[in-house]
Amino acid sequence: MKKNKINIITLGCSKNIVDSENLGTQLQKQNIDIAFDSTKNDANIIVINTCGFISDAKEESIDTILSYIQAKEKKEIDNLYVFGCLSERYKKDLEKEIPEVDQYFGVNNLSEIVEKLGVDYKKELLGERTTSTPKHFAYLKISEGCDRSCSFCAIPLIRGKHQSVPIETLIKQANYLAKQGVRELILIAQDLTYYGIDIYKKQMLAELLKQLSEIKELNWIRLHYAYPAAFPNDVIDIINKKDNICNYIDIPIQHISDNVLKRMKRGHSQEVTKALITKLRKEIPNIAIRTTVLVGHPDEKESDFEELKYYIQEIKFDRLGVFTYSEEEDTYSAKNYTDNIPQEIKDQRAAEIMELQQQISFELNQQKINENYIVVIDKEDDEFYFGRTEFDSPEVDNEVMIPKTEKKLILGNFYKVKISSATEFDLFAEIQ
Image 1: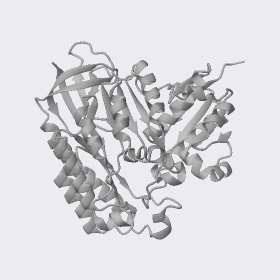
Image 2: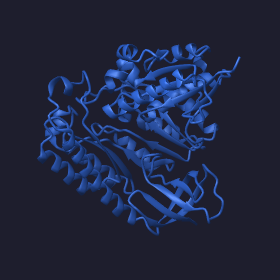
Image 3: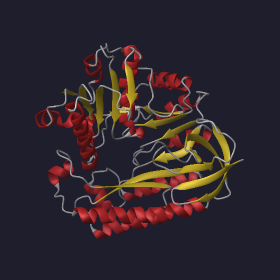
Image 4: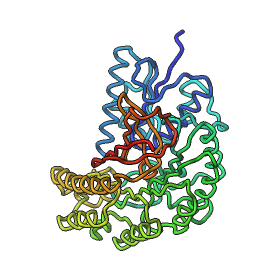
């Protein structure tokens, strides 16, 4: 009989990447042949990890499922399984509407998926990870779920209440990853700042960072997704004290208008956001701050939108992403507000924000010309090596492009470069 090969397709955020890697670890460590997001068409079993966050993500998940159903009908694959956020939320609907999938699983059914794929679920493998990212960086998910009550967000409905992973478990995982060659660790959660409250009855992100920073193999530790309210001051202190904690943080502010923040049930005012950003910039002078904003929330007035634009122009975030509001079933916004902003207005507002940020990014990047930075090399093509500074996260931020006329560089290694030119979202550099 032909030996099975399993291709794990991951859609959505970095938290899904970790879930897929945990599945892959269970399979690979028990001698199952796996691949992540392979385009070789040599796998006979497909497992899709879906996203159900917003309408565009749902659509991508559905389209991916349908494409593999076609492959199954053509007998190009034998089995198709689906798990993740979309499957968690709409399992019964999916089973009814797309019955060709062999089985659907939710977000917390790792053991069931593993056993369905023919091996035993082994708890002792939870400290190990088969990574799907380049060998030198990995994501570390420090908690699951969320206790926030943002009116527009379905994550608590999908992922449940906030659950921190114990520090000793995370340190074990981080040490394992470091021994496998990981040099950059990216901490992820729905809200990093809430870490530890459920287990230790207090915020413990700073203590976790302190212990992680003592792992000598880790050159960079990066923070993603911190809520603006009740930001722990001791995190600022530990960033300043530890050289291997990047001067970088991702704080999704979502909006700045008090009217919109209240309707979003964010639980804080614009004053809190402004004070935090100012404090971070003052106490960590060279910090890069990434944010995300949401436009088109029900009853977002033109004046609210202009207030957001003004603040973005004033504060000049180093990195910024924008989403348009998508009505999600069973959320507070869906139950209590009318989705009364036309999609074309939402799209126009998002385009205006990105146009504004493009100009800001260009100006900030121009200031980097002739400056020296340490970069890690992520990948290469025929002409360039592509690297990142500590102020840039994989996939979403600036890349540093180094011509291949320079000396041979090794992927995953760190080099000192001098920036020679810059565009809105790319830097060009020479090895020093």
